[in-house]
Amino acid sequence: MDQQIELYFEMGLKYSQIQSALEMRHGHHISLRHLKRRIAKLGLNRRTGYTDLGVLVDFVHGQLQHSGELHSYHWMYEKCRQYGLRVRKADMRLVLRELDPRGVKQRQAGCLRRRQYFSRGPNFIWHLDSYDILKSYGICITRCIDGFSRKLIWLNTYTTSSDPRLIGGYYLEAIDRLQGCPTVVRGDLGTENGHVGAFQRVLVPTQPGDTLDSYKEGASTANQRIEYWWGFLCRQCAEFRIALFGELKDNGHYDGGFLDKSLIEFCCMGLIQVSQSEVRCGENLY
Image (cartoon, rainbow, N blue to C red):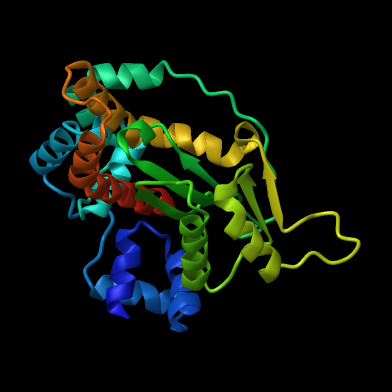
């Protein structure tokens, strides 16, 4: 139990949240007072034991050499926690301002118009979609998100996003991992979601008189919740790859042929999946 307490403490959860997680996920029923004693015994403290500033500067500098140059200080702070670094948000702001002043100014100048969105609760509706901005380089990204909590259900990279068996497999893996399925799945018009629609309607059949179908489909532009997140993914991760591959194309090192696509897939597919796994973990923690 001490390992679980330490894990949740390092994730930044409050005492009451740690207590609830221990009870719901691990079956440990302990009082808040006892939890605080266990935390003190483990020597855990949020006010001391911060990572050396030089280590933080080196870490941020390394991240700025890749897609980390697109991260806001909130996201960079979460990434530090993923890698076991304990830092203050104020220190993170100062380090980013010193190492990447141009990027900070660009993010501060950005504007975002928010639309209203409503969901009845967790796992009521899942939104799924594919991201084809790297498709010309042989890389396709598929993602599913919970509409209420914005939890990433899956975020996978492969050579295609048009095979209904592949997308159906992602869906079945997700419901097997989570031991449940949503009330509604929202997908785009197209054959790639055919298997998902069939599975969902079997698992959550629509009763006579129901006005809400368990599988909804419509235009990609109207899939509001996930379309917003594609913009977030582009800013935080994908834009780096877009610029990198575009530079290869502009310099005549990529012509879109079978060999060039295969080389991109062989060299970069795994790296992109690892990067997206970090995004998925960070987003779900955040």
